[in-house]
Length: 330
Image (tube, rainbow, N blue to C red):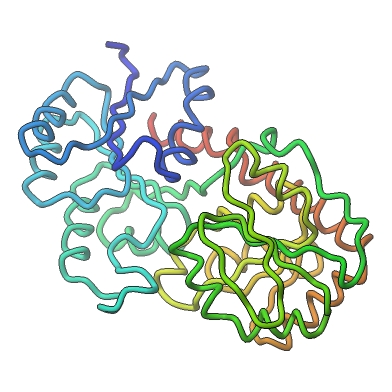
């Protein structure tokens, strides 16, 4: 076993968090003599404990997101030379759409246990880092990153007014937020009759005044589909769970050269610089003004979309994230 091989424990090797926060970094880490052995955490107790026992053969362990029981944490800690906890959501809470509310005694207890036990924590944003720092002094911010090379096609911004294409990219679970904000979306459709919203997802909503163009999500076609649009929209509920989100869709919009309109919640307020990479909008009137202005100004969209792409390359690229993770692993 290599002296600098880390065991990475994840819920699923194909999960979006594993893809963007671990697997994407593997080539650049390898260039610096660090390898990752990424394994899904087994559900059966004997298999899980056996995998944890194998941790003694590695330089250290990266545990991603999973809130293990106190017994599992103690077992893993016993066999791990070094233990890092990586997380990109407010995992100590329930999500925005849970009928039980945000607070969860079980989640909070488990998060506190792993945070205190780990040698270091890698948090996806400042909000997450502040919570983790209550229990551990070694907390590092590693933003979720993307590879701009995977977005070679850039939005051309030749459409004007009602011909403009809005786009929303996300999962079925986060689509709930879009559906609950239908008043704002219908207002956009009424302000610009003919405006369309392209939804890249595995489920598709309908609105009274804003036609939806359904685009089934495909990892291969995702970047090209974004480049066929004009304005990326990012709306999340203003709540603790959303403040823990790491803005992946906004990064993807910017990488494709799209200008972004989003509400100022969590990292969205950092990623969208008003008048530079897009516009921040809180009320329905704010959204209408921002979208109408950008729809009627293709040159402005092109300029701000290019600035968004540059921001990704400088602060949210795979190279940047791999360098930060490499420092933590040292």
